Amino acid sequence: MSDLTRRELPGDLSWSETTVGVVQGFFLGRQDRVLRLGASAGERSGERALEGSVVTGRLDLDLRLSRRWSTFLGAEIRRDELDHAESNPFWFPGLDPDELGPPRDETTWRLSALLVRELPGGLRLTVQASHEDRDAEDPLPPSPFDEDLDLLSYDRTTAAVGLAWRFGREGRP
Image (cartoon, rainbow, N blue to C red; front, side):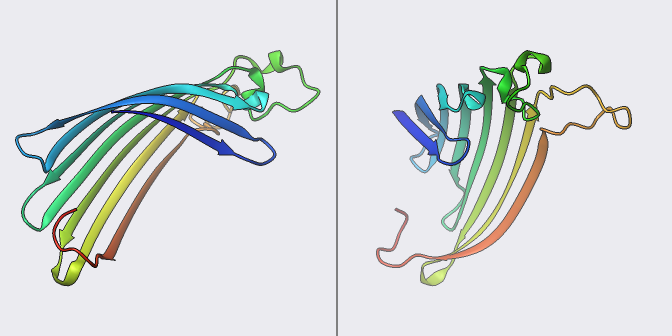
């Protein structure tokens, strides 16, 4: 399976991203147990500060654990390599871009898990969690107060519990 994706972000710093990817799925003994591997690559265009390339790799695992329990696990790594020194968030018009060093690069890891319990009456209880770790090459010298201070990188963890109602045809789609 392959895909072509185009995303656009309007605004003061508008850009568009076009990627081409491939995904291969493998059944793990049964049709309700699937391992998917995917990769994509593309270009980002628009404002000079946001131009660059992107490469993504993805691994997904969908498992039916029992008649009423399912789990979905995912992992993704994304590498953004920007083309111009203006990608530095501390650059502003009138400043020589070469004074701030090389263009910015970013690597983002994402991990996610979803557990689904099918309940009577078409209800589904969902529990999900995700973690994202973004590592951006910070063009600034280390702070004299905190050498580990990185203004462009972050870690984010989220969790949610939900209840969904499915009506109509019974059974797994």
